[in-house]
Image (cartoon, rainbow over all chains, first blue to last red; front, side, top):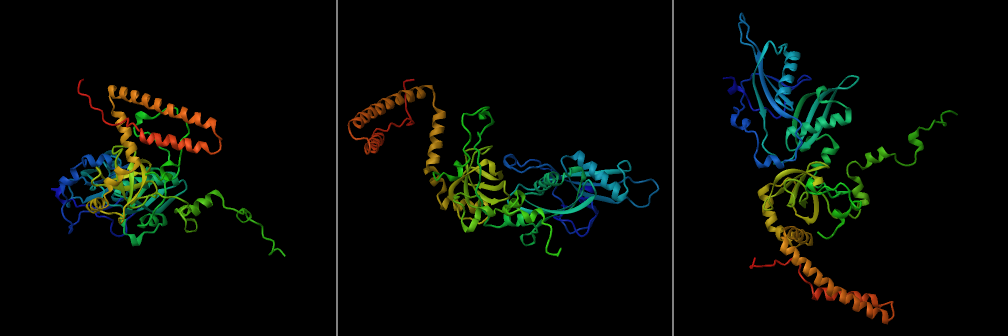
Length: 237
Length: 208
């Protein structure tokens, strides 16, 4: 019964949310019911192999509630959460962590009703994803808004995690995602994202080292140092 | 008096840019557009650029850059070229001279029309790069007997070439050295052209 109540996740969160993943109350909504087959379809066949998108995380929808207690009048409220995690185990863990913090429902006193991976359709176009996050640095908590260009939200999220790790030494555990959205071109904030969104962007490729197409052909030692300019300057196409 | 004597910060003393400042200046590809020029680069990563995939699943195929995602990745498509629409790392691409006029993010079907209109497949096949690749492929496919034939033909060719070189050397030693080398060289080239032995022509043998 509960499965039918699950909605397709919205593109962005609505209104103000706390510094944690979104927790939705069960809603009577105008959104269409979820195509169960769509969300269960795992691989996109051959296409998924050639998709070069770093997927550090997957998107999950988790639905849970407190366990009903004997003397209780009302049924416990059902909550739905959108979580980015590398696998279901961590997704569940994150879910309960936030349920505990937000709704005072512990894993022991609650039950997970459903967990579904949200699989986006294979990439056809590049979008700009805006991510609002809160992370813990060595000295305190900070909010951030970051933009990433990618074909799907999981790719953008993966970029974000790597970016945060590289720039701020913030590991995945310390980052909470507040909000994600697809940013229309007119609303892009970051200069770098803007410059790549521009249709006339162009740049040459420098310092090209040609590498063997198959690992098998990788040589341990070579007689000559590589030429770094051939691929781009060669007018012989 | 002390108003005019301000302690100079390191920033003010330095006459040029520090490394990080240069990075900031050059961050958004400014270096490629110095004074309107493009520093002599001819091939750019841009929407419509035809590129050759030199690593991975689609290695050896040609594709069209549909949209630039960031400085390391692009969205690529090759409808009649056997490349599914995908995100690919720029490390796996080699840019060609061909550039199609497409809007960024063009759909597969529309791109297919553009490719057909520009006769891209034919143009790529005619390029010396493609010919070189074809020759390499042919060489890799040779069987033992064909390799033997290649060896024999190479030997014949070497004989003819050395003969001509010896002749040219003989002529050269008799006359004044200054102008002759050019002539001798062109003589060699003419010889090559006329007596070119196609080592990679398909050889048929039915007796085996």
